[in-house]
Length: 136
Image (cartoon, rainbow, N blue to C red; front, side):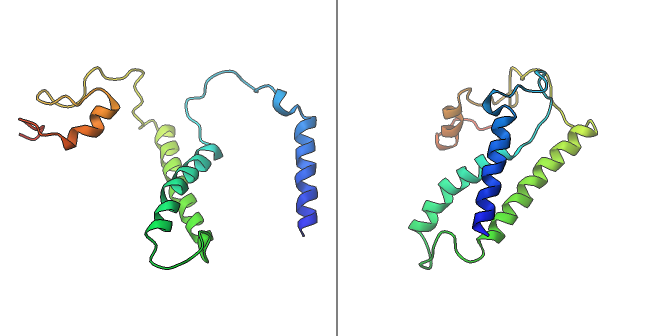
């Protein structure tokens, strides 16, 4: 079984190299309006693993391996939930209900409240004391 998998992997790798490998040119150079790929899922899985694996190691209720019994179920739930978000985004774009303006607004918030412009300022805002809040 493993020998077949190795041979298949080697054969697919050779085919990719013969088809141009890293020198293959893109079919088009036009930007795409919307796209989704496996790279998003892999990146999201990596980030979640970097967050939750240490948490499970530090605050575990039971002594268990990271790939415990049932990890495939966790992976299926992950792909189902993330694929659903991608699918709804595509449906939104297909039916023209997605709001994607060609520019960013100059101001956010309300007339009384403007959030901080920097990312760190927005993260720190809830932890600072304010004279007036957006809600009065």
